[in-house]
Every structure is written in structure tokens, then in C-alpha cells.
Image (cartoon, rainbow, N blue to C red; front, side, top):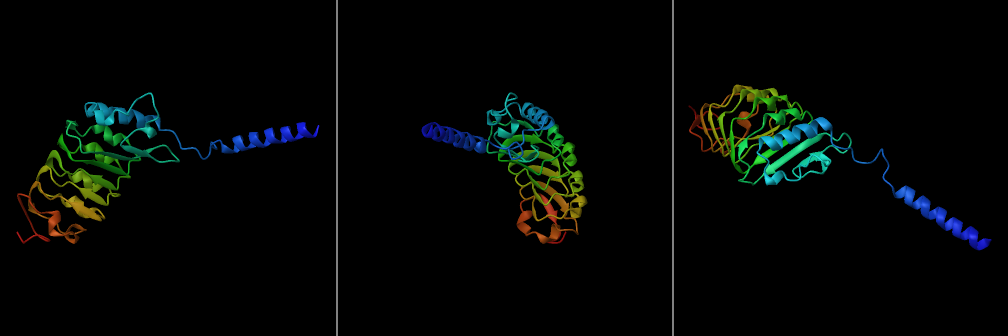
Length: 216
């Protein structure tokens, strides 16, 4: 009887240990939001289904996919990072604007990423970090970037942007900024944070002038 009781106690203890080792539903990472997953698959298609995004499989939880991060509590996509791939040949998909919780978009060293910045990016009201560096992007630096009040870091360097720097960027509380190595021209807008950056943030453009560069 004593042996039976000891065996029962051991089994009970083991069962309790196994139960406690199971993840609590309240602590488990949230699964990917269905609307975000739909947007991500549209982005993948818009980039012509590059191998870089091979893990973006509709049959799996998108929070497990490569090149992105989800918020552990809400399951919403908050970061996308795609870089260093010359096989990504497309424009930035408009569907990027359908990720309302996105805080960071980093697409850099993609020489065949071309065309303008899509206006749908202005819908990303939580975006604070935008790096579109060393791509083949062109067209103007869009004024609608000034509508993204949460934006504190903007790097558009080493592209083919032309025209002038829009005055709307003076409305942003920028902590990091770089538009060097483009084809920009005209006076750098006065005000905001644009004069707080070193001249290197504006170097190697067609004909930019004004502080922190020499006067026009």
C-alpha cells in the first residue's frame, strides 16, 4: 500500500509538472492578424515573389515569417526589413499602406527597387523609422511624408530622387535624416530639424543649397 501511494504521488507530481510547463494562453505569443497577412501576401506579389520572401507562405502564421516582426501581444506586424537583394525587381507595393500598426519600414540595398514612393505610405500613422536607402527609387521626395507625424528617422540616400526637398518635412520631429547622393536641387527648407543635421546629410546632390550647405 505504501508503494502504491508513493507511485501515485510520483505520477501526480509528474502530471502537475507537465501541466505547469505548458504555455499559458494569456502568455503565448499572439498569432498574426488576418488583415496584416493579406496585406503581406499582396506585398510579396507586388515584389514579384522574390526568393527572399520564400517563408511568406499563406499556410503558416505570418508572425513566423522572415524579414518581419509582430507585436507579441497583439500579433500586428510592426517591423519589415528587406535588404541586400538584387533580385527584388519592382516598385514599392501600395499594399504597404495596409499595415496600420507598422512602426519600421527598412528596404535598403535593393538596386532594382524602382519608381516613386507610393502615397499609401502616408496611411502609416505609427511609422517612426523609414529607411529606403541605396535603391533605384526616383521621382520627387513626396510632401505627404510630412503628414506622418510619428516619423523620427528618414533615410532616402543613394537613390535617384529629383526636385526639391518639400517644406512639409520641417513639421517632423526628425532625429535622423539623410537625402545625400540623389539628384535634388533648390534651397533646403528653413525650420524644424532640417538645419540640425550635418552637411553630409545633403551632400552629392545636383544643386541643393542653403543651411547647412553654402547659401544659394
